[in-house]
Length: 211
Figure 1 (cartoon, rainbow, N blue to C red):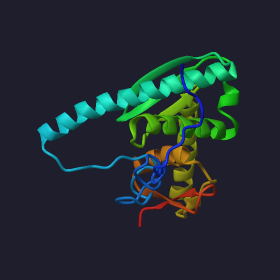
Figure 2 (tube, helix red, strand yellow):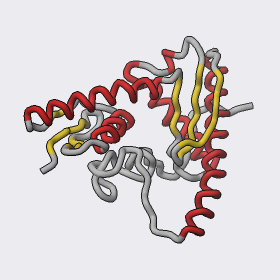
Figure 3 (cartoon, rainbow, N blue to C red):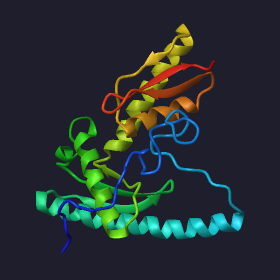
Figure 4 (spheres, rainbow, N blue to C red):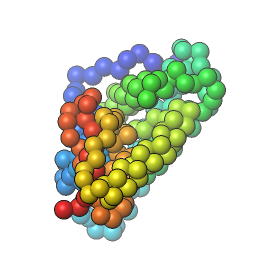
């Protein structure tokens, strides 16, 4: 039987320092959020053989995390009486659990607020089992994929305004996931840069011309 109680631990758990239990937010060299994504990863110097060995071990560990997370989410769905197909996988170097099915919108909530809470609970469940913080990504009903497309349009619109008027554009406050999506788009375009300002839950992105 899957234990779906709220996981507890005496060890500190910092999900978004940043948002992967490793970094602060979105992007500046090292751990500031102006140069590395909210849910970014650290780069380490290592020989090719060491990297290959680490990757193999990491992939196994990451898939194990996704399996633990999938079991936890399945238990939650049973308790809440929701039907959904659950897939666990490893993508872009992180464990992922996707829930697909009808009547899942309540699990997403307004602007993904409920989904973010469920993701945090699921990460804690993985932490309880493994003793290590997890960068697990939970998606329900394809919300994150759809939101990425919307945010890509927002980012491109901001970039167009910056290039047209030569002035910085401040976007509305966003979650760490949303900020990462915007940073990814802006950082791929020439002549502009992005950074974050403020504190949660009012942290937002500024898009400006490259100085």
